[in-house]
Length: 343
Image 1: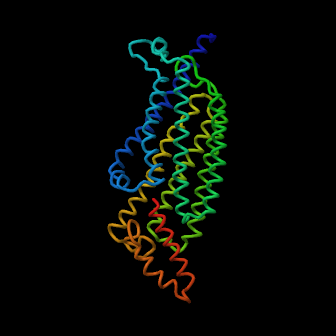
Image 2: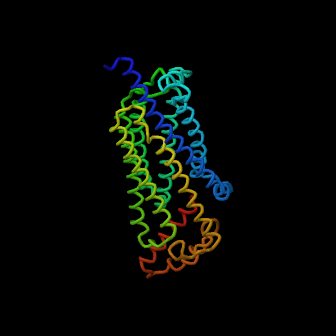
Image 3: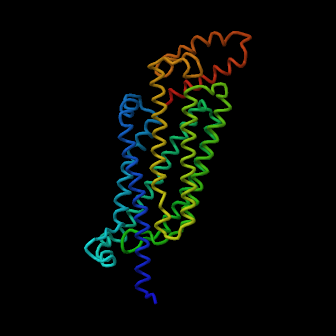
């Protein structure tokens, strides 16, 4: 017959085992951030450091270096909740002797809240970069901006309200920094709203692409924007759906947080890489003078200097009887030109 002590012991062991899985994925996500940082740091120095200050650049550096600090927050919080078993003792004795009892309940709650808030800030900063990117891609269309701001503010304010209620409901175990309970349905709603936000922005980008740039489908810049946007959407949609599934489908409270940190880390990596890809495209265009970069038109100096294409063609377009299709194509190329300069 199972005694009360054995039930308690099994419950605690199960909670710590779940926490270890969460820790492993959190550490793996941070390792991916470090690898990405090392891999892209030369590009950052070459493409970002010399350029003038701009809103995208501010968000790039804020997110780029905050995610490193966030990783440290995750490590300090996770390792406080991960027991280390001694090989010299029995399993139960080692477990009892190595419980991380040093942090107080208040310290554990503070560390957990710090990681949770930092995670939310990471996601919001990543989404902001994506919003600015789509707005610039629209040719700075005021109607598109109004729509993007409306959905961004509406969805993220709702997320923050639900997120705050979830964070208030989370209770940690007195022994170790392990989540013991909480209204995890609220956390599932947060990721559901995040999925809606990513989907809306992706649909807005597709609308802009087919509405404004339908004649420039072979443009290398359009291809980069479409590829990065599609990869971003697929990765984050899959992670958001997986998070909702894990949160609603698992029983152990710690295990419900299994994919939260991997999504935050990948969110930041994809957002910063998208900006680096655009800067890299601009650098290649300026260096090679590739006439096909913007749909086969000569814009070799259009990114960092004077746009020779615009000067030559404005005279032609101002003449009467110019076909509307040519004017439309010119406008599309000009929009892409302004987009490349804004980033």
